[in-house]
Image 1 (tube, rainbow, N blue to C red):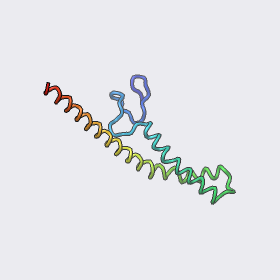
Image 2 (spheres, rainbow, N blue to C red):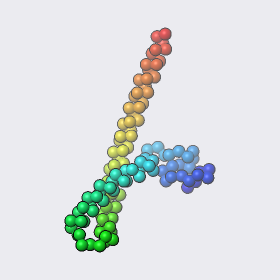
Image 3 (cartoon, helix red, strand yellow):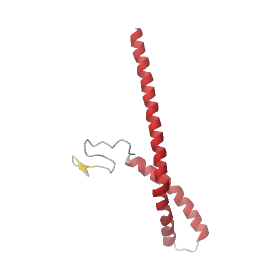
Image 4 (cartoon, one colour):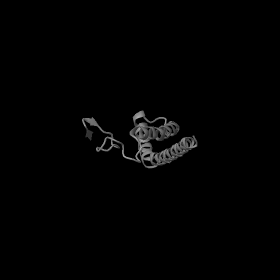
Length: 113
């Protein structure tokens, strides 16, 4: 998809070239995916080294991806994205509370002078 000659990421809208609200940016999703896959791959490689040390590397890689990719896609990444969304909403609420406090204190000082 393009907007004014610039390619858009899958999570961006074409209207004003802004990201759709509530969807994590492509960078956050990449980090979350890495956080899901790296531990699964590390554990899987350790398990395969112990269970099938004589297997050729290509067969081990195939077996590893056969388990890691569905586990990451269907279990780990969605859960991590939920956690990220909750943390993001909490941070947004905290910023809004601080801004409200700051605006009230500035407004109170003006009234008093």
